[in-house]
Picture 1 (cartoon, one colour):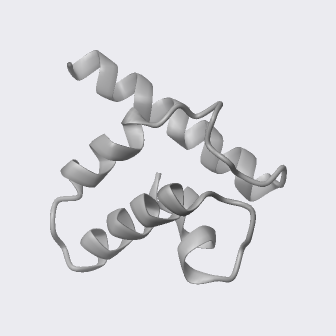
Picture 2 (cartoon, rainbow, N blue to C red; picture 1 turned 45 degrees about the vertical axis):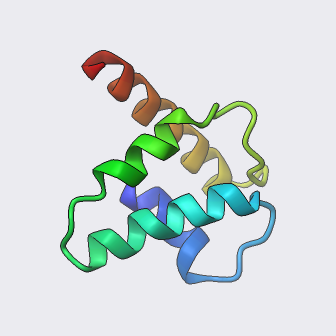
Length: 78
């Protein structure tokens, strides 16, 4: 998941929604600070991967796939 996030929070990649950006940024920052990003990962998992705005690029498809996997994993643990 973290690998899929990096291009969207460390460079000026456009084409994602503000709410998605904020959630990705929070996960990234908590990881950098060595804190558990569980709360923010749960927020990402609550987003519908098919409805969030991401660019139709390799990075965007990688992020959408990661969001699908995260959502599936969260649903299995619920």
